[in-house]
Amino acid sequence: MEISTAFVAGATGFTGRAVVEILCKRGVNTFAHVRPDSPSLDKWRESFSAIGAHIDTTSWDDEKKLAATINAISPGVVFSLLGSTRRRARLEGLPAKAAYETVDYGLTVRLLEAAEASSVKPRFVYLSALGADKGHGEYMKARKRAEERIRKSELPWIIARPSFITGKRDEPRRGEKLAATVSDTCLAALRRLGAGRLQDRYGSTSNRALADRLVELALDPAAAGGIFEGPLLTVG
Ligand SMILES: NC(=O)c1ccc[n+]([C@@H]2O[C@H](COP(=O)([O-])OP(=O)(O)OC[C@H]3O[C@@H](n4cnc5c(N)ncnc54)[C@H](OP(=O)(O)O)[C@@H]3O)[C@@H](O)[C@H]2O)c1
Image 1 (cartoon, rainbow, N blue to C red):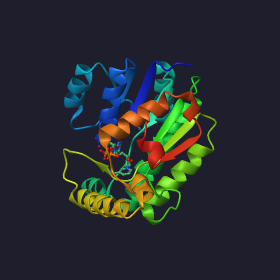
Image 2 (cartoon, rainbow, N blue to C red; image 1 turned 45 degrees about the horizontal axis):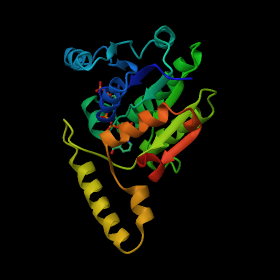
Image 3 (cartoon, protein in one colour; image 1 turned 30 degrees about the vertical axis):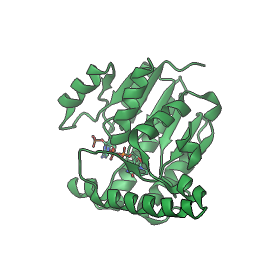
Image 4 (spheres, helix red, strand yellow; image 1 turned 45 degrees about the vertical axis):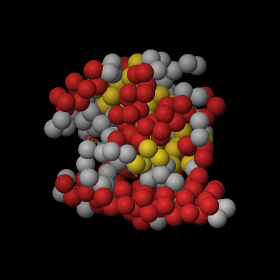
C-alpha cells in the first residue's frame, strides 16, 4: 500500500524537522505534531506551513484525543522522534531518569497505543539509539523498554538506532559534539588500520542523512519488522 499521509511526533526536534521537510518534498501529506504548550508554537506554525506541512497540536495528556487524532488523520505512517536529554530535564525541573521515563518511554508508548487503537493500523517508525538493546544507564534502559513494547505491537514497526546525530543545532550540545568528533576521529584512524566496519557501525550521521533514510524505510513495506543500525541505517 502506498503511503500518502504521515504523522510526525517530535517534529520540532533536530531529526523531526528534517523528516517533515523530506516528507513534504516527496509529496506526502504531512502532519507535524507540536505540543500545544510549546513556547514556539507560532514559529513552528509559520515554518511548517511554509513547507506545506499541517500542524497538529493534540495534547499528550489525553490518550483518547490522541487516538482520535490519529484516527481522523489516518496516516499510513507514524514517526516517533521524541526524546529528552539531561539538559532538557534540568530546564523542565525533572531528574534525568524521570524525563527518560516520561518522554523517551512514556510518550513513545502513548503514541504507539494511540496508533494501535486507530482503525488505520499505520507503520510505526521509532527513532531509538545505538546500544538500546544493551540497556546500560537510565537513558538506554528507557529506550530498551520502549523497543520491547514496540516489538510486541501488531503494527508494522521499524526501529532505527543511530550513533551520534551531528549537524548545526539551535541549542549548544558541546558534550555530544565533542564525543562525536572524538569518536569519528578514532574510527577514521581504525579504518586506516583495516577496521572499517567499526566506523560503519559507530560513526555519526547528520540529521538530514538520517531523516532521508528514515523516510526511505518508512515508505518501504519490506522494511517492516526491521531494526536498522550501522550501515543498514546510513546506506540507502
Ligand atoms: N542526539 C543524538 O546524538 C542522538 C543519538 C542517538 C539517538 N538519539 C535519539 O534520537 C531522537 C531524536 O534526536 P534529536 O536530536 O532529533 O532530538 P531533539 O532535537 O532533542 O528533539 C526532541 C523532540 O522531542 C520533543 N520532546 C522532548 N521533551 C518533550 C516533552 N516533555 N513533551 C513533549 N515533547 C517533548 C521535543 O519537542 P519540543 O521541541 O517541544 O521540546 C522535540 O520535538 C531522540 O529520541 C534521541 O534520544 C539522539
